[in-house]
Image (cartoon, rainbow, N blue to C red; front, top):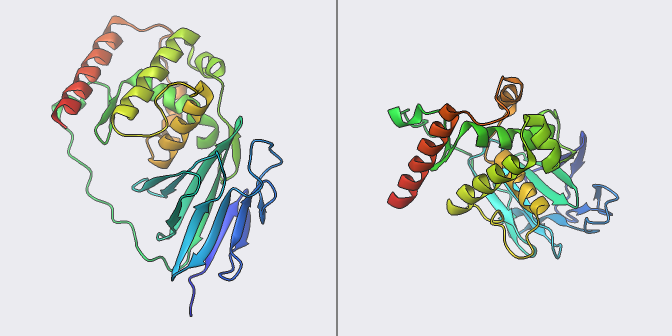
Length: 263
């Protein structure tokens, strides 16, 4: 039987996967990610079975976010779950303790290929300073918050490791108070949770760090923010909301409410 070649790339190192033995990824796997006590010894496994390559989560607590390079496909891999590696290039993100990791999976002859649809035409309602991704609209401040949290990853040139900024550090980066930052973070997470994104809704046992990690993984995997958005961090912006910004924020929120009401 002819097997498609699969390669895992992490921190600039390439690992070829054998269909006979597969490849383990974790603290002590074939791919030794990091000596991180929060990371499972064997967390993810790439294997060949029934004519397909698979990525399996063999851990007990950690989850992984898997997406194609265009941000058109995303899956949240819970413990015990597995997905077929059916696309040419997939990117995998996961967080263990304070550190978030990502690596790439390259499939030489994938079973499927991504097809990009034409972008939707802009309407008059889009011209209020809000960024719209799918059916979720973000105010300029909310977009800034997401970029600030993703900044370490957007500045990296290859898959590897980064730490998500603390809320205090991100607030300082934006020139905001911590209270304002946390309020915006609540709004962003609630909007995405209402749109169906899992792992963002704060509740019992859901720490802010976990919520921020899931937000960053989601934003990167869906291309909600890209390297081009880093320019927003250096653009002039007020430390306190202006009346004009408040009007835009309220208009954007009304747009989201109307869209969700018609969904």
